[in-house]
Length: 181
Image (cartoon, rainbow, N blue to C red):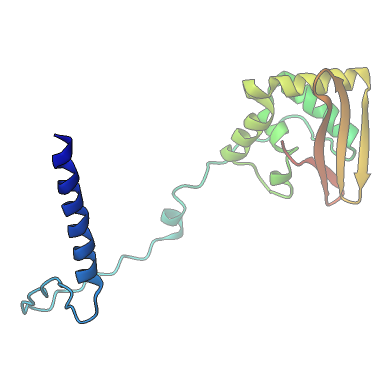
């Protein structure tokens, strides 16, 4: 059986080479697809333009307003801000926590999206380890504030494999805000 396979393989290779040469040689006319038939049709009617939305309809996806915290935000110093964050985490005050974030600086009022962002930054179960380390370093007073202009970092010695933990802050209009994880 083996001697018969060699001539068959040789013929197949030869046919492939000849086919390739025939396709690539100049002067051969490539096969093209037939042109589509054009049928005269009446002019279609243009669709009516969309009605202009009123401003209320245009903002359908805007987050609803949210209530402010009963507690006053203290963020003139980073130390005041961090102490307040730790207390607000204990009472799960999302509005207070939202007001500590850079994204809400200068906003006249909070919306539900701000409260959800605060929940993600401070209260999600996955952030408990981080804020637990911050709380421990805070009570042990093993931290240092490194400020340069309107930016600062709270560098905490937390020990273990992590060693140090750094939280970024930014000053906007004389008040400090947490810049986020």
